[in-house]
Image (tube, rainbow, N blue to C red; front, side, top):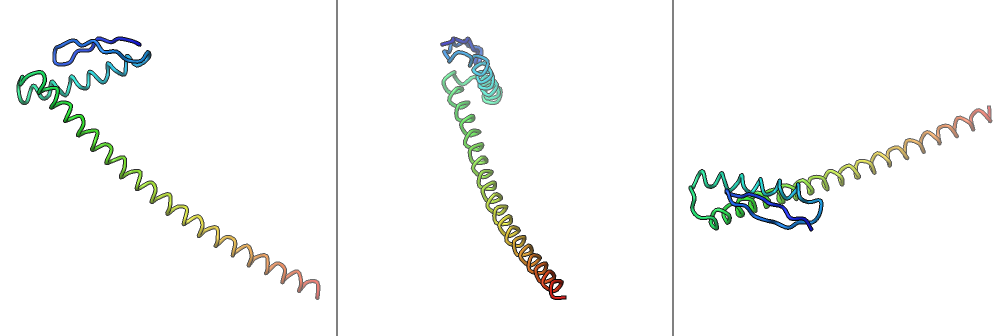
Length: 116
């Protein structure tokens, strides 16, 4: 396990993470620090706990919106895939019919030539 020192709202925190996750954890903490800084700038220093809670709620709201958008995109993708599969089936059926018709015409021509 690795240990990383991060700073949020001017305070240092020691956080443990899996080996190799240090850079990712640092990026996450910088994002949280940025959100806390934005809040502090708009509402003032209302206490560490309240700032962290508000930042957590804002970040959770962003996550919820992202999940909703992902669900909508997955639904659109499923509909497009279903539509494409239906179109492919329709094209395949049309192609089969055209080949059968062409094969029958060739057989008819061959029969005519044999009888001529």
